[in-house]
Amino acid sequence: MTLIRITSADDSRLNRLIPLYEESFPESERRKIGQLKRMIENHAPMYFNAIECDGELSGMFVYWDMGDFYYLEHLAVCPEMRNQKIGQKVLDYIREHLSGEHLLEVEPAVDEITTRRINYYRRNGYEIVEKQYRQPAYDNPEKSYPLWLMSNRDYPDRRELAEHIQVIKEEVYYKPCL
Image (tube, rainbow, N blue to C red; front, side, top):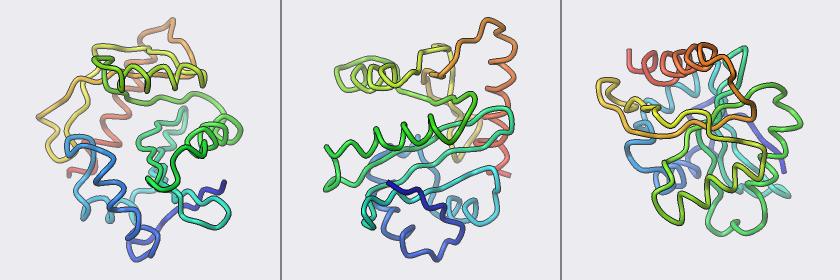
C-alpha cells in the first residue's frame, strides 16, 4: 500500500477519485469540488492522498498536519477494492508514520453501521473523547452537524482538547471558506 499526495487539480488520479469522494461522504461532510481542488493546490496543511495497492488506484485518504497533532478527515476505498483490508493498511501506515496525536470525526452511534465504524476505530486504538462536538458545514460555518471526536490518546486536560478543536475548525472549516 502506497499513499501518493496529490498536489495538482489536474492529476488524473484526482479525477478518478472525485466520484468516490462524492459517493462515500454525504454533502454535509464534504467540500464542493472547486473548493477541494483549490485547497489541494494551495492549502499546505491538507494532504489529499491517493491510495495505491500493487500500482492500482484503491482509494483516498485526507489528513491534516496541524503541527501538534494530525486531523484525519476522509478515508474511502474504491468499491471494487473493498474487503482487502486497505483501510486497515492505511490505519497501520498512520500508526507507523504519523507519530503523535490523531483526531477524527465519526457519526454518533445511532445504528448498526455507525456503531460498527466506531468499534472499528476502537480496535485500532481510538476512543471517543468528545460527544458534544459540532462539525461546521464545509460551505457555511454558520451551520453545523453533531459528530463525535475520537483520538488515539486521552485528554485529562480538557482545555488542550478544546484548543485542538478550535485549530481544526479554523484550518479545516473556516479558513477555506474565506
